[in-house]
Image (cartoon, rainbow, N blue to C red):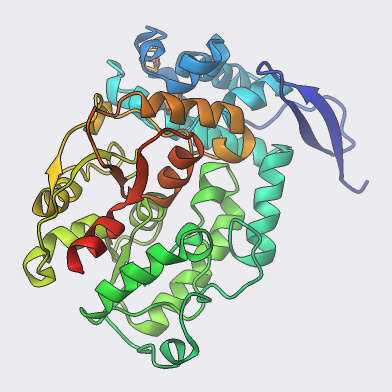
Length: 387
Ligand code: SF4
Ligand code: SF4
């Protein structure tokens, strides 16, 4: 019997209607082969320490939207209970910010477990509409927005035709800077070009949104496409200004590739950049996937301090609060995502001219949350200091 996708309209505990897609196999009430690594799930001893830090729980208030609740739900799935719409919304509403892992006294890594569980649900044919839309956008267009324009539309024809075909260094632009913030891409490339960096002729999504939402097989295909491009260029080092691309390229692509975040590259080359001091006071928001997940804390601060005064936010580095944009939450649960961003803006100190960050998704989510202080990417601050 042919598999069919059945849509059920449901309301999750946040009151938001969503579709639960189930692939019908024709086999009645078959138990799901839920294969998440049990050792990592049973590391959670249900102590509840994470209740005080999970930003989604802070907004939603239900135990199922808390780390501990998610771990309990995953245990139930392993024990053979079928997934329901509440299970799906519990697992899909984690931003994978990682603060629970940083604080967990038992050494559990909940975001890793949540991602593995999402991948299992996808394998079992259980997804939300938002996940399906994302998957289809990346599969049909090679980017997470479903854009049909060239990814290099921000370059002039002559710039495109003179791009070096071979280089040791590639600037991996990412979907966000390619299509939503081409001005960041342009400024970044203007700086990196002086160091002999080139671009991939046909870069596609790094696969972060697919990996974070459980579409591992789809992700592998697109990662292979990017790897072939990287091999053709002959590059051994990738530089990226997006925290999502950074963690994916660094942790999900082959280990022999060297991956550097833009703030790290800028910090390493401060002297050559010849930046002037600006009479500004700024604060810095640590993107979760650059900071907590990869411990890139000092490089952006070094760059900012070379240019102007840095006034820290209330929660920084390992304790930084999530902007709410990651893990597919911005797409699947926009209200929760914006609430997290608003909470993060509460951490901004008085008397700063800008909020600086180093991830376009954080820029977008924090900008959408409003507030009266402009949010800029670190490359914009650097560009101001180069003029
Ligand atoms: S994830 Fe860690 S902090 Fe949270 S309940 Fe489990 S053991 Fe406690
Ligand atoms: S990764 Fe962040 S959002 Fe997800 S359960 Fe942990 S603290 Fe909550």
